[in-house]
Length: 109
Image (cartoon, rainbow, N blue to C red; front, side):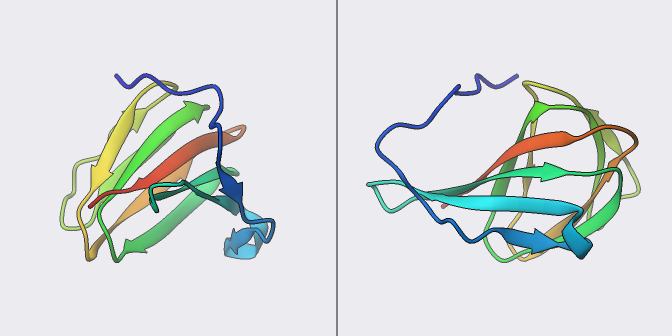
């Protein structure tokens, strides 16, 4: 389990949204003083595949999802307070059955 923050202090938020899959996945980029970045987003019901350039950690803030990492037939369910890591130059399929899934995506070094 992860400990999710309620807020981020001293950051810059890019106002232009990152919009994917006809608006079914939307996020905003948050830039930190140490040059790191995260995205905060929402996923509507459906199944979506994302590729990764950098390694990522996806932390689930609210809602539920099921994830399959590229190269694996295994799926895992995630809910609030849980996370999964995705290797660089890989990808994952995330599925949401109902409601919204809220997440924090951290780009790992």
